[in-house]
Image 1 (cartoon, helix red, strand yellow):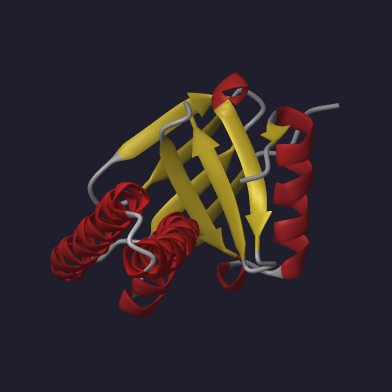
Image 2: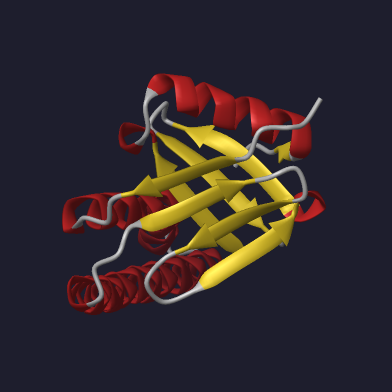
Length: 181
């Protein structure tokens, strides 16, 4: 029996591109921001201990706790500053990508064959053998495909019908590896 070749043309739209990229940015930074906020809370608690020791005139412990508190707070500020800078840079990249995409408006082509996974948009074309592919489903909204551990492709489920989506998931189940993110 010959395996079916699945090929989809999904529309490129500014809304979908922004939505997918903002989702990816949030997914990557949200956990780190949560940890950073927990570190700040720890720094504040340490600062309270430093104040208590200072008031009891135990300057040695007060100095140690003050040092930890100051280092934690500086680390928090540095990390938050980095986040804001990266978010701004990310928005600039997305805006540039959208302007390029408006100039070269072409559909994205997704290809699932017995030998490879292919992806083509207005600026690049990729083909990967199945051993390099992992996938997962994010928030029941996106099919997240990773190739060679460094390239990510996100297929919005809204872009394909339910039958083709199920065929695609079956294809990925049989050819690639499921990996949780």
